[in-house]
Length: 413
Figure 1 (cartoon, rainbow, N blue to C red):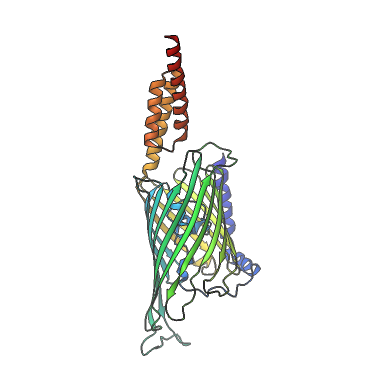
Figure 2: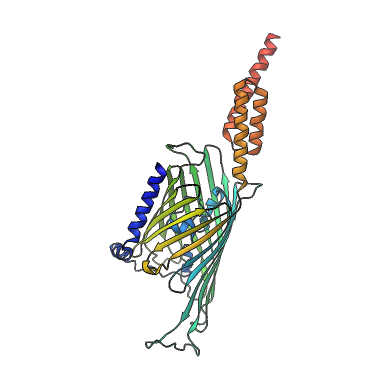
C-alpha cells in the first residue's frame, strides 16, 4: 500500500510543477530576490548537473550514493556505490547548446572498500553573431561564427574505513578535475584556457531510529569542498568553489530524502554567490521503476527537477526535466536522457548473499546442537565477507560452547 501512495504523491508533485510552471517559476524567482554576485565565475559548466540522480534531485546528492553522479556531488560516496556502471547522458540546454557526459564507476573485487570513478563532461555552444537587421556580421576580420566549448575530465577515488554489519563506515575521497575552455578566434581570440582543481569529501552511513528491517543504513551524512583550484589565463576569474554539507534519511526502505546546504566562496577573496539549499526525494516504486524530484533554493534562480528511472535487465533508461532560468516549459529545453549499463553487478551483493546463506545454514546446525559443523559454516561465511558481524558473533558463541564442552569432558572422564 505504501508504494502506490508514494507514486500518487510523486505524480501529484509532477502535476503541480507542470501546470503553469513558467508563471510559478517567475513568481518564485522574484520572491527569492536577486544575487548581484552570480555568474562571475569561470568554467560554469562545473555547476551544470550532467544528468542522473544528481540532476533529478536538484543536486541534493552530497550524502547519498545512488549512481555515478556522486563524482559531481561528493567523491567519498564511491565506496558506497553498489554497482559497476557505465553511463551516457545528454542534456539539451539553452537553444542549440548541449552537455554530453560519459561516466564509469566501479569497486575493485580485491578491495571493495575502494571506490573508483572516471567521467568526462563536454559542454558545447554554437554561436553566430547577428546584427539588428538579422544578418550575420563580421568580427576580428572574419564572420562571427564559431564555438564555445568546455571539457571537464574527472577521476575520483575513495576509501571506506570501519565498515561493519551495523555501521556503513566512514569514507574519504578526492577527485581531480582538469578543464579546458575553447573559444573560436573568430568570436574572441586568446580566450582558450586550462584549469586544474580538486574536490575533497567525507561521507558516512549509519542506522538511527530505524523503523524497518534491511541491511542498508537509513542515514547518511557528507561534507565536501568542491572545485578548489585555478584557471590558467591572464586576469582569470575564480572557479565556482564552494563547501557543502548534506544529510540523507530513509524513513521507509524505498524512500530517500536528502538535504544539502551549499556555501559558495572565491579563493581570490572576491564576494561569492549567496548560500543555497537543495532538497531531493528518491522513491523506489518497484524493481523496475524509480522516480525522483527536488528543488534548489537559490537567490534569483531556484531550480525544480523531476525525473524517473526505468530499470531493465541489463541497463537503465533515465530522463529528467529541469525548470530554471535557462529553460521554458513549452520548449522542453532542459530534458536530459541517460543510459546506465550494468557492466557487472558488483561482487559485493553476490558475496553478501553467499555469506548470509552460509550463516543461515550455520544457524540450522547450531539449533540442532551440531556445534563443529556450525562453526565451520560461520568461518566460511567470514572468509567470504569479513564484515558480516552476525557470523562473527555466532562463531564466538560457538567457540565458547565448544570450550565448555571440552572442559566438561575432561572433568567427567
